[in-house]
Image (cartoon, rainbow, N blue to C red; front, side, top):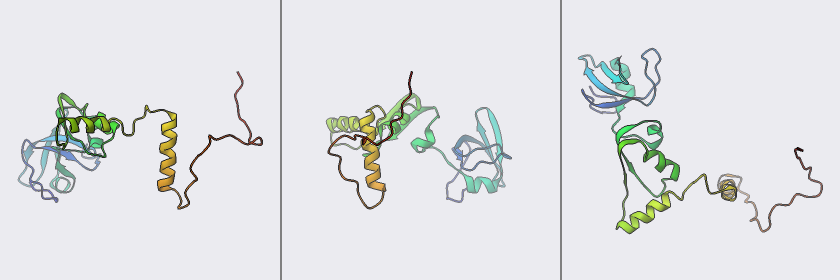
Length: 175
């Protein structure tokens, strides 16, 4: 069976359904193993102990090979072995998700000149976009985002901490 994308799908292949269809009992990003390919292009898929027969039209448009996926697509999945390609934009949360999918093995792949360079890249990954860097870091990230995505007029750099004016109402909760 060949999909609209040109992928050849056969018995034993790992595939993903890419469109919700309650009549067929399949969901987007759900993964399956092909157990039968009908002469008419229908597929029988097995996933989590149950079989589904998918008509050829759906299979051609909305089934794709699933030997690799994005980190977001893998979130919540558990596989025997997981591999992740680490780049200069991989953040701590994504690396954590990727490196916790494998039941037996989790392998990170990086391009580096030597082990020391790879170690440095690894540390940098877990220094990006961390949620535990505190409120001052979060504030700076938010301000940088406003500068990057906000109006063309840039805000002045902060020179002093914010102090409300004497006329600014103060809200408080008494205990």
